Length: 382
Image (cartoon, rainbow, N blue to C red; front, side):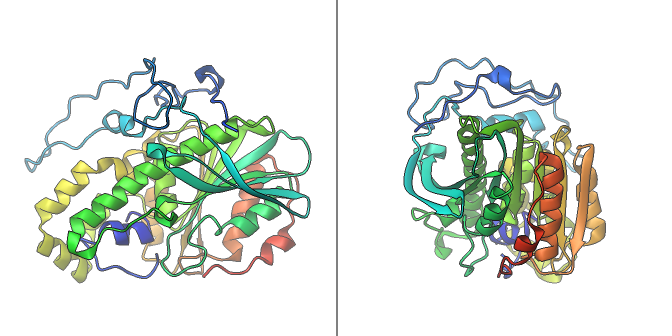
């Protein structure tokens, strides 16, 4: 699934929807270690039309893909990891044009409401939480779920959690996904399921770029420790986070919540009669063509390129994902430091999951003691 929510929305053609669901300078490339087996796309100068900077010749070239072998059933070959990487290239020299719209205090924590230039030059609404003191602090970038009808299906989802962690010396950047922004116009029903699916896939690559621009923002702050940056994503933004983990090299740790990570495989392996009927109705060839065209939106291509990140997967017992399937996901992440946990909860997860992930982040980001009582008092997500 593309996450319990995004897979339902994105693959509307397969299954009936279920209810889940001041400019900062960019550092020079040499400041970021690059895994030998994964080309970094943090290089300046790639021209994708983002921002207003004049593109310069890029020193990076993606490695040539190995000759693809046709599948045994005669279908066209699937793309390889190097084939997909250029989709996520962006101009890291383009100005962030950060604009603060409000600043206030939560006790000693400074909460800044702002926006910055994201993919295609649009504005990314965000919160930036700054702890008291001078740093350098570890930092977390947060991606929210998209459950329709939830007042927290936006950057507010993790705000209270981020405030608690800020009191322990953590900078947080919380951004709105494209679907939560005022300019988002959802594809009309009469446009057809394929158009809905394509729109959601385009939103995924949009969000990956906006998150990478968010890391640029954090990198430009002297109070952020560049070697201690993590990502937390829920549902659709966990799906996006798994792709980000295979593209980005500046994040050291990921918490991915309530998602699946092998979309095409799961769609055709499903024994659910309703889903099988939907595939038959739309046409198996059409569905497979969609997955080939938008392969860059299937996390499975990126899981094996997460060697240097630490990965924590959180799952809900109330979701359709079984422990056997979850273990297969975990096995496909190439990280040496990885774990997963199941919680007796619905798609929103629960306080136990929150405490587990913050203890895990505390260890991996070397955060000082966190106030676990305050974490437990955060209202349950609905």
